Length: 307
Ligand code: PMV
Image 1 (cartoon, rainbow, N blue to C red):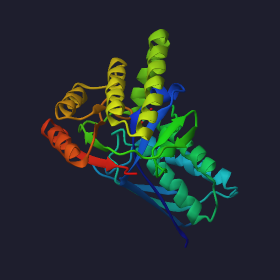
Image 2: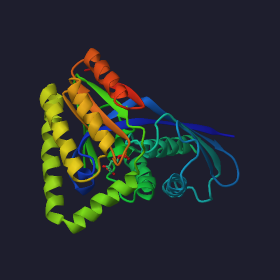
Image 3: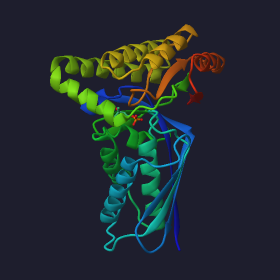
């Protein structure tokens, strides 16, 4: 019996979601307080999956389907001829359907656990490619920003499959769960239909988000938090116009700004899920988080990546 363990964590997208699927950059940060641990125990027979996570104890069919593809891809890339057998247990602290990268983090932890259990060394690119197989099944189309950020220790500026590590700036990010889950697959689909039906508006969306995201990455690195916050709020407006926000998330964005946040926006796939707000320091962040809970958020997290 050989047991392997793999770890990953949640992520939040500061700017660039959806546009990143069309080649724009995205700015994302790891959320280490939302860990995922996968344990693979080798045994004869097919791979079985079990997942424990908040709010949703059972796995969705899509997630199971994604993991099945992931196992097949792992087996092939690891050069294992015979079908592999294992119990794969995933302990996931990330709420699903929340825009916090639960599917990518579960996939990443699973690949690392399998590699550990079967004593195979995979480089970063191989792990990324295998995670992307599961992500594509789960989301229909996946940029890869989640696949990388769920394994990164630092903020990333991601574009077209590669990422640059950014030096973490000061500031505190508040993440608030609106309590309604959104399907990333449906949101990605909605943006794709708009790209087909209104190509000019879509191209303008991608172009403006790309501009904002590049400027925001420079702001983050230089500690210009006020400018970074303003760009986040502007990105929210663009996402709202693209139809992927909800009334509740718009209200939470307003509440955060009224409570003194430097910027606020929906984060991740959208159509529900989480929003984020930027604060200059911990006390300000706690005040914003309190206001967001008063306005209907079911839970909040504070993330800081102090230099
Ligand atoms: O909802 P999440 O956490 O899976 O984030 C999805 C991010 C998108 O840009 C909407 C999709 C993608 O593949 O980049």
